[in-house]
Image 1 (cartoon, rainbow, N blue to C red):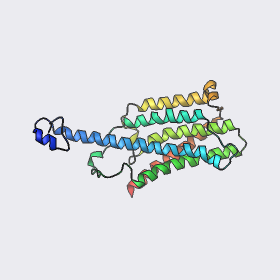
Image 2: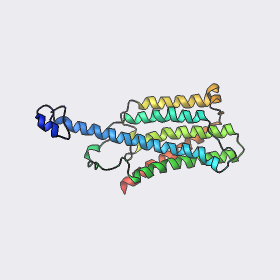
Image 3: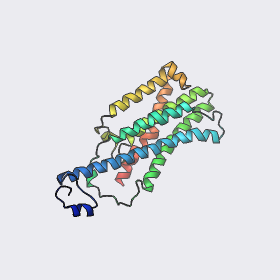
Image 4: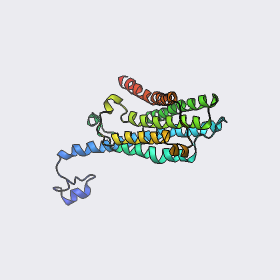
Length: 244
């Protein structure tokens, strides 16, 4: 103990309590687990969302598609400097999940990720990439312009990014429970995402800067539907994995 312990004890100890109130130890452990698990959520989200960005930019080029370069630097900058960091900061403010203190402590030698966790994150990103590349190829091969295909791909990727953030709020609890988590940034993130999407889709100057075009109403709905399918499958996976 930092207050009552002798100087010799403090020098020999691996851990010194700055407050001798032992009742606060549980709270300190809880906060430590919260920080650790929220860090895992943020990093796994970053791994997942970069897979479709990388594959969408590289696969068409490697396969010599008619539109090999769907993204320009401004699209990558937007995703890397605005959407990505915004969602990562969101995870830092997530509350402690229920049952966290009932779990056994992890081994000090364990890595931050297990092989299964990393594989799951890569799978999440790969399925998002598969859905987006499917849209990309279909509209490209059916006579739509480069700007139209780019708009479909970019909007679907942004919406998928938003859904992925909410899906990854927990790797055990489903969305119906995690949506009730108290995170003061939730409403701001939703409003900011809707604002960015509205600006990109409907303000001519912004749309022109991103080299996008207006879509038909049905295709906006299609972007939303595809984004939901390629991200919300993880909710089914969580339910299945927990019941095994």
